[in-house]
Image (cartoon, rainbow, N blue to C red; front, top):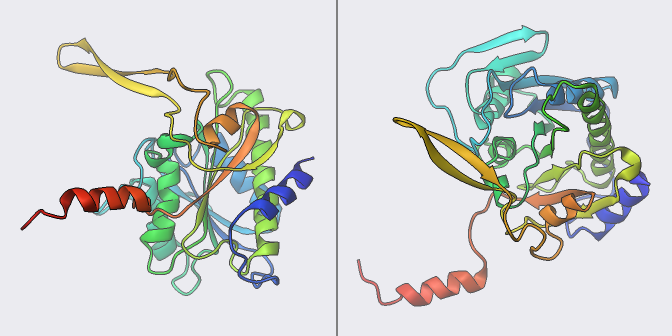
Length: 293
């Protein structure tokens, strides 16, 4: 069912096809990162599945949890350790690890063919995607490097409290194998996996494969996936609290948030361009037209 659904959604997508014949033949050089840390179950599952599929894979990921760091960059000198063969721990943000990997870990004349960021422990849907370090790594791959690299962010929700539980280990293995199929499908359709300046934000519901309803070519939702507030819990100490929004079931058409909650794998094409649409730009232009320096 997944293969059939994937074919349908890619045909529906409005992504331009660069070429009918793939030029990326043979194994891909893949940089894998995340915002949870280099040793989490999700990133290790991706490394394992893409290695087993015959690709050349390096993990270049943060040394600690950098969740919520968006596309922030670490500009000072940082510590980088090769903790295992082809697995690097970087004392910097996810966006930084992409630049470190592409410019200093991979050979200078052999930039990665693809950046994959994840599997994140927590869905990155709606407005939350702009805060995500997982998604931020793809923005870095697209907009910071001199030569943009195709990039895919992949996230899911943890089942229960323990990401290392057997149930979650089975889940991330399932998702990593789906990612291999997604990449192979993109390679069959595009000369460089994705059009220049485009990345994908993928969210996979924490469900058994047979319960997944399909794959939805989505748009980023406008209703927050969660609400956050800070409360004073001690003198000079404020802690975050989270809640579900009242309008959680309502959103724009083909919202990733709604689709994910209905059991669909959602795929949102993103370009890192934060410019508002024409009508909103026109409104502001009208408001400020009489403004002088």
